[in-house]
Image 1 (cartoon, helix red, strand yellow):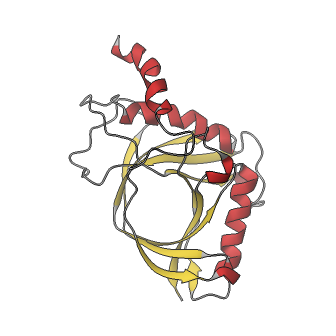
Image 2 (cartoon, one colour; image 1 turned 120 degrees about the horizontal axis):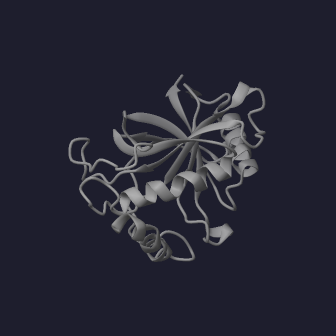
Image 3 (tube, one colour; image 1 turned 90 degrees about the vertical axis):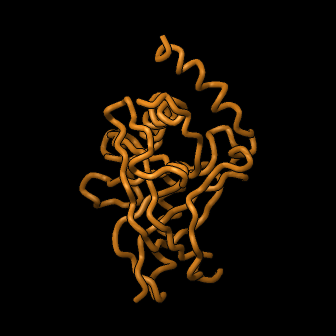
Length: 211
């Protein structure tokens, strides 16, 4: 019975977020800004993140539909659909990372051609040992190691085109700088779908290393 009621309970819980963005006080993974590329290079921050826990699942499909498909089971997990029956609490951002089949057109994506990992970062109070295990076998818990990443913030609707444009701007900003990308990146989304587009916070990121 509790599992059948959970989708009904999720609606008001998610709806408690402000129409302007996530509710005040939403926890984010801590980081230290260790560098910055100036306005002429796109206002890119270089951040160092300590190890983080993420609950994630793999989804196949078009970029935006993949987010939608993964969001509800991940939200159910943090709102109590776990072996401890514990409400873990909402955090930000939601992470999306993936690849386009063939990797031949990094700014284009067609429906059904993508494989994506969608994840929620877990609150810092949990360790891998204390974090409740998900009931949904599609959700995996992973420890992300300490990382240095280049981050470019953008606003507006986080459409596939907007994400691709931000990723391209980030790549251009890194060219000729003291930092080089060490692998593929992804996107982070901080606000629920009903947030006013101009007030949305999204970020493109890439792992980097100082040249």
